[in-house]
Length: 144
Image 1 (cartoon, rainbow, N blue to C red):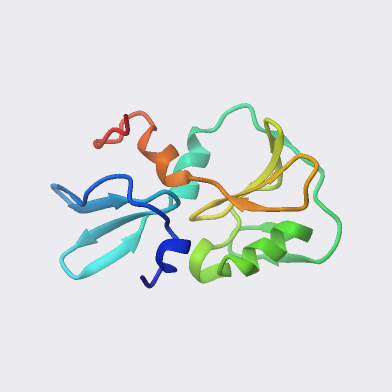
Image 2 (image 1 turned 30 degrees about the horizontal axis):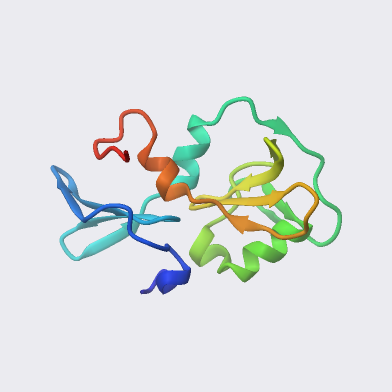
């Protein structure tokens, strides 16, 4: 509920599964790790970005921008507006990539998410990274 209820993480994709280092549960747009009373959000934006290949740099959007000295990246235009609307630093974390072209969408990664703007629109959506994370090689709980 603290992560935005249903509108935040979305539907659960798996039950809470115990592992040697704690319990993991992934939802459509987020994954959480629990050790006792401590629940942390997995940085799935970082983890999925590592698995991406072939993304091409894109020219940054025009309009307002915000630089993040902690990562060295900047959010521009509709990505900045969407980042703020989706909860900003607390929900999505700082940007961890430049704007890139991914298929027919312009994307930018944050620590906990991927912002996506389909070609020909000004609408920025949150990618279903919880689902993509569970499909990465080496993840102990496999999404089928």
